[in-house]
Length: 267
View (spheres, rainbow, N blue to C red):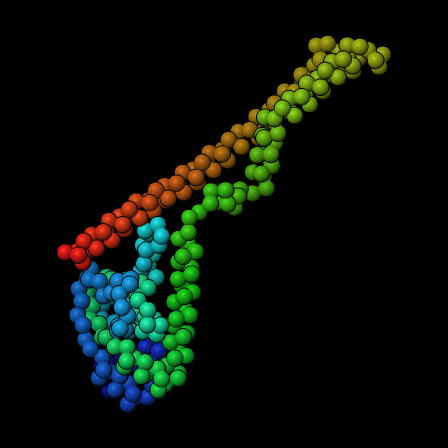
């Protein structure tokens, strides 16, 4: 068995093939040498070949609507890529860029489909590989979406933080002001009017002053806690704004790249 046939036997998609079929498939492969930085194919290119990495490494990626580069996979020796476009006869859905000098083996669409038709197990293994790729893509996309500042801070702050925010918010409301004004008026009125014979807190209202002082201490602590939480919330919001600005910059760069490529094609 040739080296190429041995390499094919290690590829999950072709592991079910008999040795004679592996040898025939190996004979149909054509070697291609590419250097680091070369583009094997771009998004939108026609999909007429699949590729098998013999040596080196290829990165599979695309850019989202913000222009951010999202890497789907890195294919090293023994890995296959580019087969999806052969199945649905649609343009490439990602870009393959060489990240280390490579020797690739290519197989055209007709030869690949002939192998799939003649070997149902190949189709099953291919479906399993596509499913795994879709799962990885979903995870990458989920991590690439823009974060919501409110959701981020809600997750990071616990019950204690929410209690501190609630108390600080109430202490800064008109309800808090009117409630205390009414309480002080009743307290002073009861002690100056002598409704109970002897005032329980005579002038200068030492008990009231002590209660107000204790309340002030606790309110000060809760307000400081709330301010610290607001500082942390602002930091998260600034980080998100920074990420958005970076993505916007990447999008502009991506548009320039498209225009440059269009100019090259026209010229």
